[in-house]
Image (cartoon, rainbow, N blue to C red):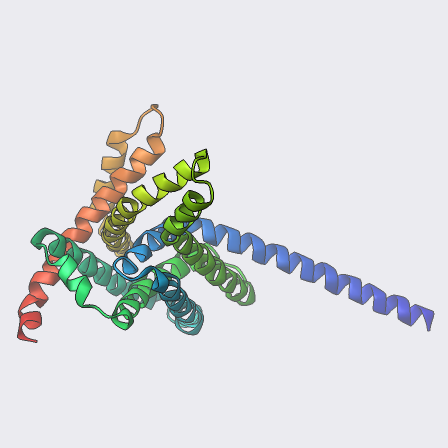
Amino acid sequence: MSSGLFALLDDIAVLAKTAAVSVDDIAAAALKAGSKSLGVVIDDAAVTPKYVVGFPASREIPIIKRIATGSLKNKLLFILPAALILSQFAPWAITPLLIIGGLFLCFEGAEKVLEMLTGGHDDDMSKKTEDQTVAGAIRTDFILSAEIMVLALATMEGQEFSTQAISLLVVAFFVTFLVYGAVALIVKADDFGLHLMVTHKESALGTLGRGIIRTMPYFLKTLSFVGTLAMLWVGGGILIHAAEHYTWHLPEEMMHGLQHMVHGDYPLTGMIEWLAGATFSGIVGLICGSVIVATLSPFHKAT
């Protein structure tokens, strides 16, 4: 009896140790995956706030909540299962799908740039209902989320299927919380500034509140512009890496050549190199997106 009990306890100890190792593997894989896709996560956070600009303050958080819910559904119901299935049975299909997504981002970004240049941006935004805005945001988020999940999956080659699935699940929840939590804080910063100004009128906190209220409209407009640029540099980056995947090395070599030109021992050299790469990717994205806009323009006018 006692020997059987000890054997059972040994089995439980082995199972617990195995589970602990699995948890460690999943945590390590999720952390590595998340850091690999951090650039696209930042781009996603930059793109989203522009969708609430122009709506009443009372609708900002509900809109963000609707977009976040749609984003999580995108990841859990469509992107995660599709990525895992394709990685197992048709890994060759992942790059073409990413190219389609990259072209869509280039098109969206180029269209927004054209609207800014022609002055049609504000008129177009004023005509959009909340439902149209949320649908557009979720559509754009789908592309960015797909890029995040595929980049994350690429860091887990050789891992067991269960580890990949659970790690991607962790990444999906973490990225959604990170992006839309940050967006909520950004768009409600002016309310926080108003609270400081009212409750601490004559103190330094009151001054801080007034400063936040004055600067937030400009900050949101800037972030909206950065979000548009993000569509272009992420879309262009996808196309550049896809070209490299299909052995057309020139775009990637040109981008690295530009980064090498600005490399040096001065402070913030890493940031300058990143900006050079992002600028090159953005130019590629703008060129490709402009071609698509010009191609689709006759059909758009017909409708």
